[in-house]
Image: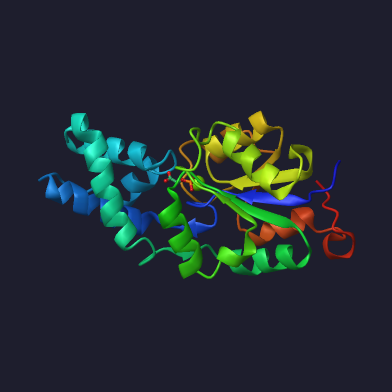
Length: 228
Ligand SMILES: O=C(O)COP(=O)(O)O
Ligand SMILES: [Mg+2]
């Protein structure tokens, strides 16, 4: 197997637990429309395909007016971007794993369907921004995951070929995008998957981010060679 030289991470549900801030912003939008609130569980099931899909799913679930989707998505972003990291936290072990991988010389990137402004605010607020050589957000290219273009764009910027790279994500769109890009893919078993994890079709599943080090570990720091 070709050694892993770069790792691309999904954001929501993989590096950070962002559901409470997404829920708050969604509920503020729904309240302005006179609609009911959505629960944290409902929010998690709506996240992953970008903000327009989140707002559309929230409107459909609460009887809102989807014909005003574009305007309501802009309103959602105004609300969300004012406070994207009030309750958002990195998952256990994420900071330490990124430090280890960075120190070992791996190139790291983020590929998320979340828009860029909120993505960068969250990475900075949680002290994660400096680990990444590239961040490809959901509004940067015409295509989003599950399309492979954002992953391939990130790898191009890192000057790494798909065969030398690994994607880590929590959802079907991460697996489909990685497969279409010709990359290996590991899925976390926490996060906001819309399907049972065993049905995602990932190369491996990890229950916590530090488990990633166990998969990559043999000689990681000595010769920068991943085992996968
Ligand atoms: O749907 C979103 O906004 C973000 O989702 P992702 O970070 O899991 O790609
Ligand atoms: Mg995700």
